[in-house]
Image (cartoon, rainbow, N blue to C red; front, side, top):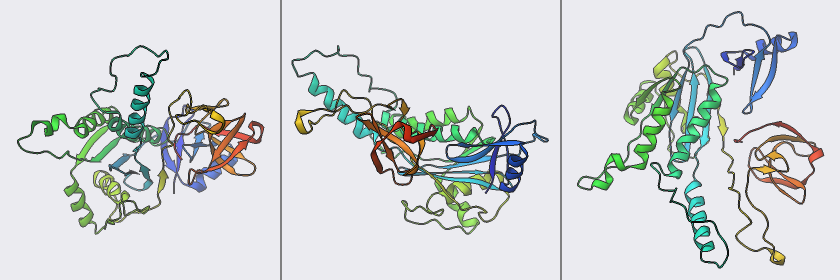
Length: 330
């Protein structure tokens, strides 16, 4: 394990060992802090050496799970296994149905606007690629990443049918947008799936058939192979520990719930704020420890588990919690 290091201006430097980081903290040379639930240190003085090695991020995309590996020639710093955003399509369908129902009622409503859902990239597609950029942005704040290598994916095409042409595929359009955005951060290379398999076979690495497994061999083996191909340095993975990142689902603000509850009451629903706190914020509670904020009801907050996402309580008082940091992942 290595500890990410930043300078006084929050610019990322080369990572260090935990023992050296502890010495820096004890002597006052550095200040500890957390970034996206990753322990980091920030130097309080000018670094003795600001030279940076080539650091590569390997990216293995997927429909349910996605893998990221941050690696240099000497070390594998971090392996990330992230869940993909899969709820946008259903949410938009529900929203569209609710709007159509409201417009049939004899009640005032806003004037019909142009159909904003007819975009170049469908919301369910763009949300998946935006998630990758969010993770990359967060990692670039603590690691000086210079190069990216992505396992390229291709849309299915059918001969004789124009609507199946690649230029009309949402997958190809979203991928093209993602590559253009990624080139703004650094050098980009792509490899085909069969090329990734050839690299795995070269280093005698196996990939499990269970795509939903929470092991290194499910997805991160491919991201590690891609990163190691570009930067070199190893024949076998030197770090198989995985950090799992699950995006928290925030519900859009609604006037009230769609269904009437007991007593004919329609409770408020949605939004990203709860009694002045941003939903997803990490807090510390005496009873439940470190957790994150969900909704609110009758002046009290609901707290959720970081590991499972399940609600721990609904009656947490504001004075009983200590705010730690903002976070949109668990």
